[in-house]
Image (spheres, rainbow, N blue to C red):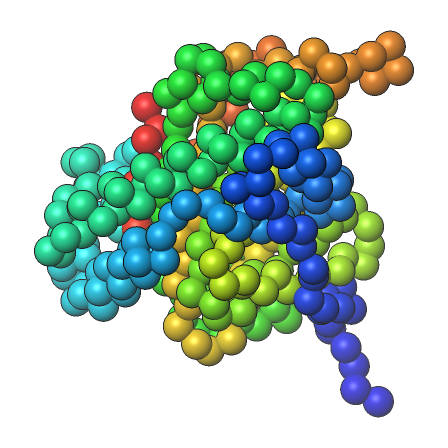
Length: 306
């Protein structure tokens, strides 16, 4: 009889169905009901009718592919600096002290800056619905100290090769995102998996398929702290299948001066704030890197970390 590895035992793979949130729906309370259920179910959902043109998204991916196709010596000219802006090759964590957001290709900077602003706009729209889902005022997060000057990080990923979970080789290892929320664009190549309940053993992993015209959104650790664990961030990873895979995640965090404390309606006599979670200044929570470990990928990041 064939012996199954421990990884085989914990990874019973299926495809997960996610809720779609229509950002063009004028009934925000209706969207909030759907969003709340999605957050309680998996912490992942799609957004559609977001206003980012397919042309801009395609151009961002085209520029990403052109950059990663450059000779290594050209990419190393924009080596990632101490603020995690720039390029990181396979298995590399070297830093360069200079600002690495340069116009490395014709039209590169213009495309990336335009895409960055559009992704930020979409995240702020989602934050309004998120506020309603948490029974807050629709503009609760839209204040100078919260999302008035947010820390928003855009990352380009290029994965290649094939994962071997039995040997601990992943395109991107299991992790949860640090921030408030993440907005993900993919090229359609399957690879993203989520584990809805990381504490239940054996862990069960589900593929998240791309949906044409939609973006994938997931909650981060910071939002879990903010709402006292009501909505939880979700463990996820990427498996390589031998195909080149490109993705563009956008990570939203509140302003640098934001104090993370329990939201007013996420506590009660029977649900006291977790003292270890709250009254913390954002920089003390900031992760040391903008991106998780990758065994089969290379990265370019544009981080606004102060």
